[in-house]
Length: 147
Image (cartoon, rainbow, N blue to C red; front, side):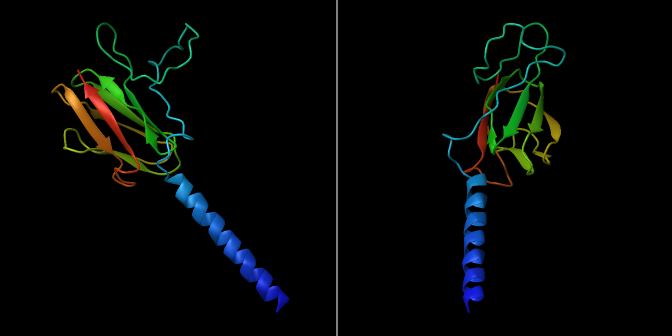
């Protein structure tokens, strides 16, 4: 009888821990997560040594800068790009995600854990909302500003 109660208590504790871990992974809490900003163009590091501000990257003018949406800890970074530019989507999570336009302004990109994909930014300037079609707009959404 004693072993049955211990097994039952252990099973309940394990199930509760797994449930809490699963709920925490899909949390919409912005206070504990880290949103990774856009990356610099390949071929060099920021020589200023200044810390990343997390502000959206703006491309334009001279040489084209890399336009990257990074998915980390079930969150996107917002991004500002030139009209028609190529946007890379990098998934730093282990779970698959999508970048799906709410108004079909650009093609959906699905990236597996640790993978990358690309799409062309809309040719029309404007603000475009996107979300993860796998985890839902309430949990994962972002903004692409096209100039």
